[in-house]
Length: 311
Length: 111
Image (tube, rainbow over all chains, first blue to last red; front, side, top):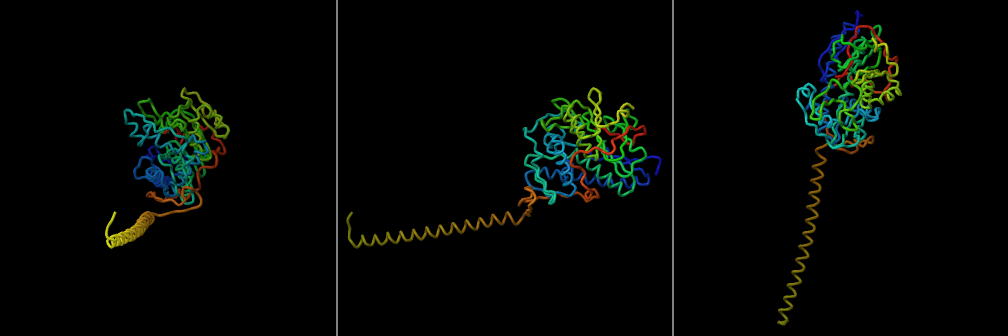
């Protein structure tokens, strides 16, 4: 055991990937495993790569498609997330995201001066109409629907990678993909210390509360980072499935700790969409949460440490 | 109308022969149309079923006797054999996060 966890970071999935391990001798192996897994996730789940499996699926909406194991798991995860969030985290908003201007990797979206919003025709929730045969791995997406697995696929990748790295190296492992964090194996003494901020790319010295987790995951959804200009004003990437438009929310960021990174991510995104009523939704589920309003005021739920916020 | 009885009889025989020829031609045409229709139906059926796989299962409408296409698959990696990530409902960790005064390892924030 070294003095503390050692980390490595690199760009992946349009964001920053970080792996931390409690045993410094395991870092290179851990990094290699994470690179390999994220490459596979990108090739399966990217909405922006024309050669990705998801692009093929979206191009064949209306026809049954035989999926790889990886994409079948990612789609099942996204459909489960839709069901558990009462449809507030909806993987069938790909066309709406494109129409809102998020039609390419965010680095390229950000470079545009503006974007003319032309929303597709309004429709009811489509996620319940997506049919996935888990045994045969056959997916049928209704014609006219585009899948976007952005939120849950990243969190699922963090969960899987942390578990794989811990099992392969015997070291405690933390994986962060754009601030969505999963941990596995034995945590360092005092737990994995995590700074909460608006932007996951902020330096570790940035002001903000610090919490420690020993298992599961922690995710932050924010409307302040992934933003761009349109002819209707500023847009962000968290859509309200009820309108097909960027969610109108009092929250600038919501951080949730849960049993897995997927659970945390789904809850945090749902909270942004639900607005103030999210506090009751989160409390009902016992999910420790820090929610920060646009005016800077905060709310905590279900045992999120108040003293951490005061620190 | 008047004329020689022999010529009237001859005309009647010619008429009867013409009616028989017309009846035979109609029968042959109908038989040919049925046969050609059958050939085209068989060709159409063969062109649909010989070139694409048909997968039938009993578990979901998604796979019920449907023509299935397949995308290029990503490489196999260890995570594919990992147990399912999401639980039945978002679940709180045990225990909940604690306040920490250690140097953070990573930042959780928007991306």
